[in-house]
Length: 144
Image (tube, rainbow, N blue to C red; front, side, top):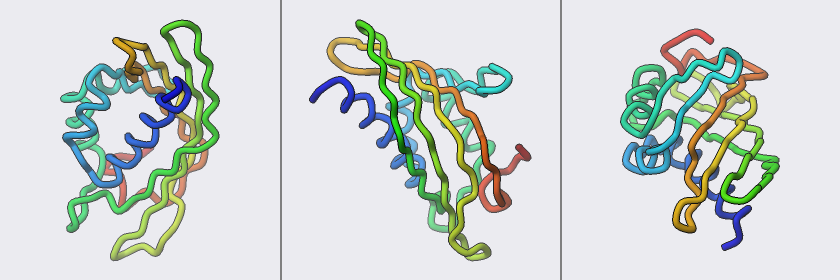
């Protein structure tokens, strides 16, 4: 697999794991990742354990054991220099719950940094930017 595909596959695997609330996969994918608020620069979590704890604290899990979301990651722009890849992409999150009809609840950007380790691309930093915010009442436990 080429480097660009390897990096973008990680983006898509994270989205899939979030939607399924697959903590084992998320833990593995985010094992060496700092999750960073894109505006303030505050580190929200470092590593897999902290990422799972962070998500569990702020995201509502519904009766089916999921977030009732679909995270769609699009428009990846991948720049690779040596063993470092910087990827900018967009995300759109849709949600449907017992209370809410299917709708877009948030859209924004990821600025991700990967490092190649032993021929594998590891996500080391993810900066989140929320650009368009809808009804997050059935998704988050916090206010944005």
